[in-house]
Image (cartoon, rainbow, N blue to C red; front, side):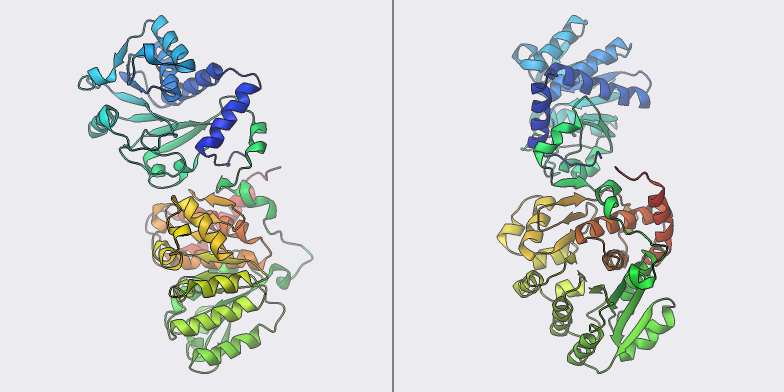
Length: 511
């Protein structure tokens, strides 16, 4: 499995462990530079190339790139932020090899105005993922000039200016390709760093996977390998209740959201799906949902619906619940809070989305206390606005990156938190987290989140653990959307789930 996300510190430990086990640091640097050269030569024919090197090991990788490209007959120029005499360690050795091969080193401070003249390709080996300050000065100036001229840029490790642990970026410019080593870092997956990286290639440079165990990795790039081992299986001797019975609250006014969620729940494999809704909306749901059962609740107020819901929950065969999509229609926040608390008190897995989250923004502690008193897992699926309203405390709002904020929110609330967005993060209260990159931009459409919530509750109903269910649903949600392409609307998504499931089934099962 190559989906672990390593912090900058963990990557340094992996390097150090490999060196301590007998692999010289220079050997790793040479392997890194050669990996970058392979990526370049696979994508471009020989052309005038400028390699920009920094004063550390990232710059050392750049010297190896320049040396290898020159040996291949490429016209290469190299400009460094520091004089060669000031370089230390393996970077100094790599610079020495470049000089011995006949290469000249320009000092970037002196050559900034002219070093890009005639260039057709730029290699950015200025700063790696460990940079935690804004990129400025001549480094930022030259990269901005290369970007403005439309030159393709190949970044070594990360585009200079992208912070490896957070994805923050100040002064960084767009790379066409980024080559990193051994494992991704959070900055490759979190916005805006992810977008600035362009195509990301993870290269093997000889670091053995055995170094991972002592690192106690708690973050992953969301891939099937993360959750495939607990994917629900279909028993040939089983029946529909073995595949779970999901209950979804359907609002009385905005009925489309719950209908989307119900279809997605059924498509992802729940054996039965029931929508419960106020009686006045029953006909709308019943006429639109063929395979989904619709249960009407009597009365015109949330208090009477709560009584009806409690009666439904007497059925032990109900295995998971969802409330939120379109829930506020026909009710108020107080009424929705009562329904949410009733579901939480039932001792079943619950997904809270949209209105079920917003209903608690004035008193989040009420929700968190109910979740922590709940014996079964809870999944919260906020978008950015809902997240900010619910998690207003300093320990969350001031945690830093989206990854850190989501982890803090999960710990505070006691729930699995799926923080939606282009870089969806799924965090568990125990610290595990995954960042989902497997999703196209056209998922930013009304109703897509309702489909995602339905997929999660469908997997929970089948017995999948909450964190893995949220990760799996996020990945399959994106896979379904990628299959469709432009013009996608949320109505399309449930019907695309079976093809995504077939593609998942065709993938090798990790051992």
